[in-house]
Image (cartoon, rainbow, N blue to C red; front, side, top):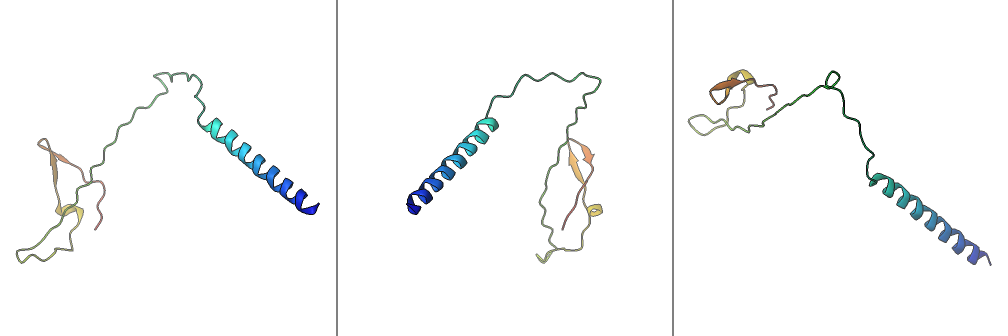
Length: 89
């Protein structure tokens, strides 16, 4: 008798947890409702681009030069010098 109750309780818990997971998944994948477009006065449009340039600097003997900073590099694109915003060694 105790075993049956235990099995029934485990089955109910499994069913309930599966049903709850299904409900959450269904709400996540539900189609979004219509959205109202923001007015031009309150909209801010921003575009950023970050290009990573991996560089290896060696001396005449093939040894690595390790004490470089961002000031030691210049990056050009279409004839215009680009600012180096981040630099890591």
